Length: 211
Image (cartoon, rainbow, N blue to C red; front, side):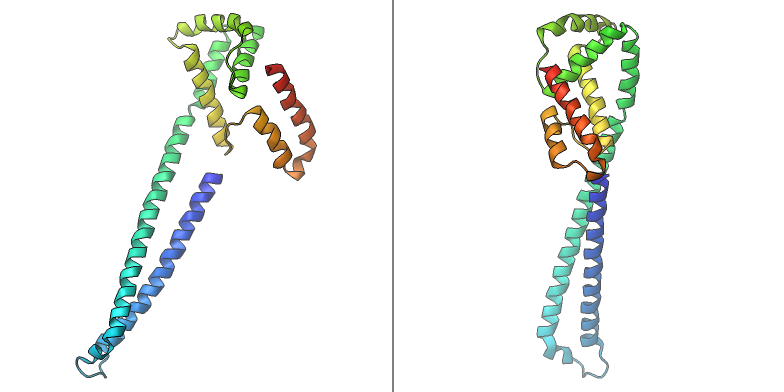
């Protein structure tokens, strides 16, 4: 919810600024009305207050410029929010990636599919290339994917899309194992402290097995 909360905070800030400017503008207008329309003043008496009129007019022009800035900022905020919505629409396809993977999985033994997922998990989590020992599983995967005109690079992109969608659903960014291990030490909630030790061991185990 971090992005949404940020947009709400910015919108509330714009609304507060706009309300403040409206109040200032109302005061300035009332001052001008008092100068120009006071029936007790002789005709043309406002000329004696021309300095006041000039200062008030300058303030009104400044307020108008500030309101224009708020409008432009609001447009920019709206555009950012719409881009986020569009991005989330695309990332919703992560569910279809899961469906696709289930169909691919049916075409392998349980062990082979587990190895294939391990190969790609290792590559994505460590940003390292495939290993020599991975080739036999990649060859098997190529054969299946060729039936639907998908290559290994595209398959990996689909897996990354699914991960990105999951991370954004939980309002987080994809991280390497080292970053996640570091985060355990820096920003782990106290109320979940009892998960910390087994999670750290899990991440360290993956790091060892991926090496």
